Length: 504
Image (cartoon, rainbow, N blue to C red):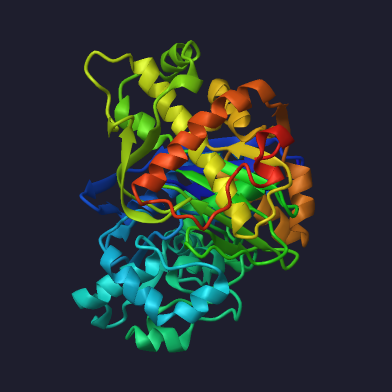
């Protein structure tokens, strides 16, 4: 066969995944390799060498399955805000500080103050786990003064290994490092106030730009054809959005994996005074991609039920009256990023901590966690609407948890809107879409060809109404604890979020 395949690579928290699809969106081959991290208090690190080794092994298996079929291009997505320092040749000098590493949290205020006017124009506030505070932490540790030190993002490491030399960063991954998406440059005045040498920072290009070609060494290691174009990617949340086909104004994708990420499309740049919402530039049409990444998600299920069988937990939860459960905020660890910013936030179940209690029914706790995630998702849409984002379009669900039909319907009923379930709910598909669209010159058209919808869920209005009091109880609890402010609108004050109006 002479038609090319398009490859997407997704560097997640738990694994690296590689996917090859044909020009109609059919999966030709898919592979994965595990990734492991180290956590200690607020710190979360991974070994950058493992990113490339895992990617290379996954691509080698993928290439073997392709049987010599031509490859049109590939692109890489990674976790947002994960960074490291390299030497001048691109060799890692530090561990990768992951997207939720909070060691630099105390420096976020300095980063915010130095660039307050710019961050306001960009519609966000600097958050504790973002990459720019991490750069300040390295500054204070003296690591930036070492000769040849340079900042790199997680995706940069793999792209550089594929090409065989350091490459430009994409503006999507560079957002949390302080890149000015309006002026398309690093903000020199802000960097000067922060005592950051601009020479430490990589060149930045728009997603969809050709970074280079697969070099000879990477071709030998991965089996990919030498000369295959390597396309500048986007963060994993944006990749999932592309993979869901949510490219029209007002359309949204919710990724539920270890954490919960929402991304949508807006013609104008939304602004959230609380700083939980931030926006990427779309790689097409001059549009914006607003959203946010919560620290809650299915990671709470893994933390509470490490050895449980998900199907058994779900079967038990299906028998639970989910409308009568106590408030549950399913946060593992400390600190929230979205739909509110609260570094001191901690998970809870009812009046106590988030934990599996002796003598309790695991199915009830599992159900409470699932409901809590769905409630946070509904709150996120409320905050997004208050920031000026258009939330009136179609909604899609992707991520690992989208494989759970019971949870999908619960989330659909909590939102009170129809939900599309893509056939392939993987961020790697979004990178295949970006690769194909970049080469063919039309990213939305590539999404229309490659993205398939498996089915559409319809909400049960009666169940939505029964779930609403529990949702309001959780919101009230978050407000009492001082984590959630009053900048958002109330859900019963706007038609789009009034369950009776079929909104979210």
